[in-house]
Image (cartoon, rainbow, N blue to C red; front, side):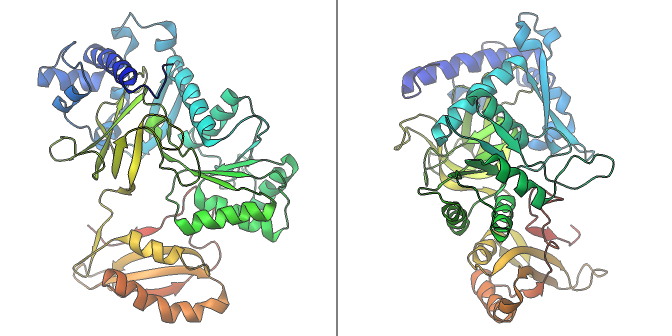
Length: 451
């Protein structure tokens, strides 16, 4: 490894690896081989990071259409080493056009570098000797990046990990635990670091405190898969304090499978940062032209793999709008792209009654009210059989009975003031909106209109 605070050395390494990756794709990557042939791009034509702008962006739908075409063919690149050409495992990500999940192939070469990446991230986050990790990611029905990442981190750091193994129960495969069983397993193990999806970690901690569970060593939470509001950050830190943490640490990762990890925080409140810039290059671009936007301005985030040998993506649109800067972290001094504008999904604005509505603004309002334990925004037609009938904006709320009258009177006007559309409030029972035993993430937006 080079010293990641050396900007010139980092750029040199990135460009050496980029040239090698593009040259391999020219001869051995079915998707890019065809694309490059159409563009007249051959080996040696892409030499610098700036040269990448000569290549078109690749949409997630391209990958979903045929994931196998994004895998390097070892038979077409006989100079690859044993580690580079041997399949280690398959992770899964976004569904294919047929509805099945998309495989993401890792060779031995990839696995080893992912493990090194996991070590860099854990060290920056403050995970180390003496820690025991509680994996609160529900057991998925296939190997998924979020679940695999916890185990890789424990392996490379030489740390024990205890898996909650929650999720939807199955009579045929009785391997998952209920919430209370998971809490008992964690309590017996006495973890110091809790790692999971924010909505599930919140439910876990609330239930643990209802049961008077004791986690005397609890000191850190690592969150991935969902945005985390300031209030949720504060609540989770409060749970850690209640368990006895004198200095609670909450780390939020911005992760996606194609990066087999993500951008991480080196301390509370730090900007998430790419701590493996020798493996991944991130650009923010105008999705229409493919040209980069100025550093710090919002653009579509595009990922380029610099040193992979299984599934390989170049200028791949992840699906978010984001602002980044490539600079040293003011806290830890590491180099890599840092998030300076909060990520948001592309296409998140929805039109309701002719008004463009940003659901995130509504979610921020709901997250700010401690009486609300869960929520969901539903958009539908007043008459489902009539596509021209008026749109309805509904808020499904889970809250204690003592707060429902206040919420019913207060929320419609507050939401209308924020997004110019007045919602109807519907109250839901416990588990109706989000059951952490059946789903990894809460579904916050449901649009029932036909499009």
